Image 1 (cartoon, helix red, strand yellow):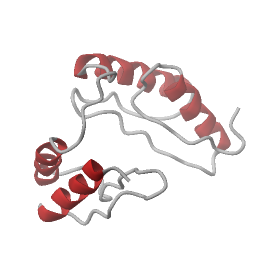
Image 2 (cartoon, one colour):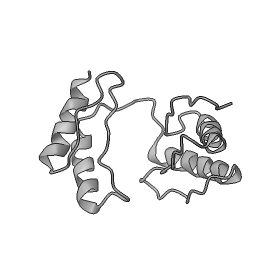
Image 3 (cartoon, rainbow, N blue to C red):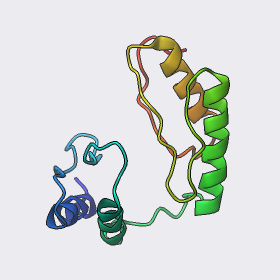
Length: 127
């Protein structure tokens, strides 16, 4: 498991958020569940982010915003109701694993853009 991810989770806990260590198999971090991140959480995430390595191949913030806009448009065209993302905030995509049409739209739209900002595991029944 990546030491930087462990440090990030510990930093978020130090800031007062209930964040478990990353999953040992995937290395992914689970963010605390909430409707919308509040200012305190956003500040902690920004502060702790400096502990994470920089992905040299990642799109710039402007490029990611344009990608997220195209994904949101694709999702709406395929029946998934999502608002346009806010600059710098990323795209929140509702996941409904029991709805094959919904998951097919999500999979199609997020896979349509190289570096699309989200990665989904394949869901049985997707095309």
